[in-house]
Length: 336
Image 1 (cartoon, rainbow, N blue to C red):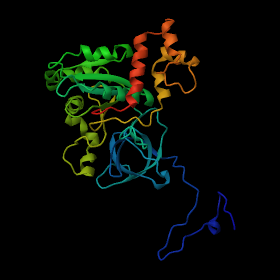
Image 2: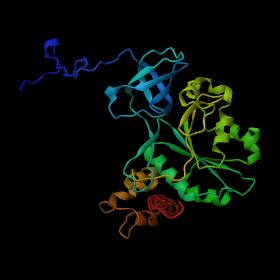
Image 3: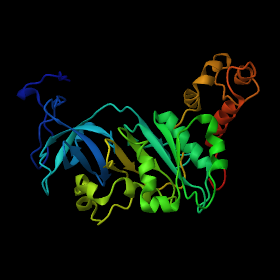
Image 4: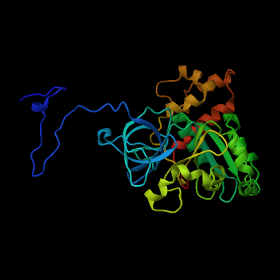
């Protein structure tokens, strides 16, 4: 049987027989060195809205990318019609290397992970202090996903007029996580947006939170409607008059360089994809003490060297407690 090299001429190209003419098959792929750079703003049913310079471009993924999918926040290379005019379509031919990824699974038994956002610098975890009641285990799960994916966490606590934040903040004091506390009135009059914006300048921030915590209200305050001109094509793609956070959407931050990525509300945050051994990287004061741990140590067993490490004064006991609490989030409990 004749074998074909990488550099075939016209006589070497194989064609598939059929009733209709088919294009020759070759393993030589174009390099697309002249492709334009863009950022994925949102994805809907195979169509991707990308920002190229100051234009919103509708594109589809090139077949040569195979199963590799582009997600919101991805830096991509595009060819084709890049005018951004109505009824035009470009093609994504390359997905650049990602600096961070926010992943989740449907539940802890689901082996299929889903990349929610790429290249975000920060994960803003929005939770209400009351109505609905805060869910610390869900917050812990988001923290684990942030640490695992290379994002820095930010706690945004809403509805402080209904309950004080002290008890919840005490749970995370030893993690040194920045936070913002807001009230319903501050969400409505825009004061909350101003204080949150201080943490978002010059950064790409993904927002997560479950229904009713005020996430969408806050995002709308950070990115007023007139700033959504860059994603004007989104309505034409989805057929909806207004984005309802059924898919992630990247929006430019008002008044500062930066991006806000609004994600759909979550009821659960599966961590089947997270290797527990990577969570320790978020605790540099404890990580050095793991050198004496037994192989495959879970860091929550009798032979764990971290107990001695803390007893010798190298780290605070509360930090070890926080680590073990985060590791325990992979053990599901009813109602979480």
